[in-house]
Image (cartoon, rainbow, N blue to C red; front, side, top):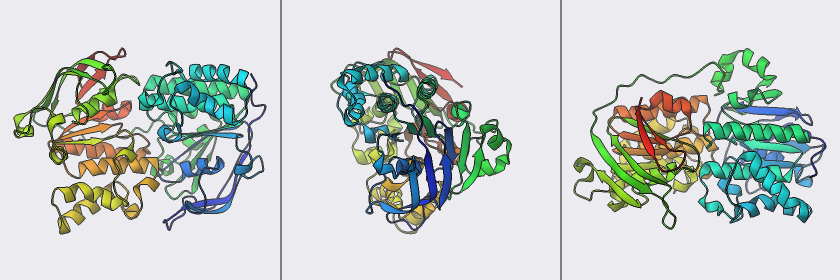
Amino acid sequence: MSVAQQGARLEARAWGWRHAGRSAWALPELDLAIEPGERVLLAGASGAGKSTLLRGFASVLGGQDEGEQRGELLVDGMQPELVRGRVGLVLQDPDTQIVCDRVGDEVAFGCENLGVAPEEIWPRVEAALSDVGLAVPLSQHTGQLSGGQKQRLALASLLAMQPSAFLLDEPTANLDPSGARSVRDAVERVLDRTGATLLVVEHRVELWADLVDRVIVLDSAGRLVGDGSPKAVFAADFQVLLDAGVWVPGHTPSTSARRPGPAQTLLAARELAVGRRSTPPVLDDVSFDIQAGKITAIVGNNGVGKTTLSLTLAGLLAQKSGTLRAALELARGAGDSPIRWKSKELLTRVGMVFQEPEHQFLTSTVRAEVELGLRALGIRGAELTDRVTQLLGVLGLADLASCNPFTLSGGQKRRLSVATVLVTAPQVIVLDEPTFGQDRNGWIVLAELVAQAARDGSAVVAVSHDEQFVASVADVIVVADAGGTKVREVRS
């Protein structure tokens, strides 16, 4: 099997990019050079332009309709579009780069486009899937994979192509802790074998700190505020790093102390079995209560059915069997299960934040997105303006109020998606990976808002792989069994 003989050199010369419709540049005249075989972690504030830089090196930013460029990016001294195949990119949202229906075809797709010999492709496919720990049949439909499994699939597709530079954008954001470590180890094995260059964007720096040679830090305006070895960067003025949203090792953020509210059960699951419409149950024998004023965390390995369970709890997916009953105070005579409620009834009773933020955006501006639920409730005028303005300010989205939601960074999209649900204060709030893609500052804001929602009396359910978030806010932890058939309740 052939491998890359040398890593690619990546260089930015006074480079910047301004998204269409924006007045500010994502990166103001960035200058940096990454040498062949160097392993670099790019950290910093959400929205600083980290993903934009990776897309630029991969030549997938789009044309003049998408934005404006100044300066230049070079891959081995050439324009990126002239050396496609030298660099490989794993996007922050794996859904946006999956093109085939079957897992095996997806991993083979890039190799085929690069003209790899047919007899070499399938050994590469199997080796890449093994490297990332995605143990599913080659014929498995890609649409049936969990979010974490899709991330592994996207990385496997990149590994199989064997590029000279690996550009990874939050490659472990939706992975359980053991899965994240296995993916990081897979990347290390490939780098050791190929000598490829690595540029990885990651907010949680601990996972990658012992793999990389260099850490580059950008502040919220996209300016370079740190560049050096991990030891040197983290030993410098850590307050500058904290201000830039960096998760500095040894500086764990704290959230406000919270007393759980009244223990009134709003939803009760009993012997519940959940699954998609045409598939067998992925979880069964699910029994626990969701209580007002408390935060319930649902944890477990990728692919066991946590997202399917959350959609069922939110009334968006019918259970396979068992019961999901709402308290009379919540149902108000409309039925004993959320699946029977109309969408307008769900608005104040159960709010759902999807794992992929884009799946719930409906308008053309950030402000209109947050206003939408309030308008459906008949709220207008000064109250509407005040509530929306206050929440956008807290979430650091005020300056982006007129922007299209789909042009935001991954972390900004997540904060916006949470805002669209919190603003209507539903009695039950269901969040699927509420903190993914967040820098340290964004994480603190979201954790505080979730805690405040519980203090105000809402019942909060959060599916999360973020161990720190769970430890900080959860009152009840529901663990989805690794076999996908059991759930047990552990009170924190």
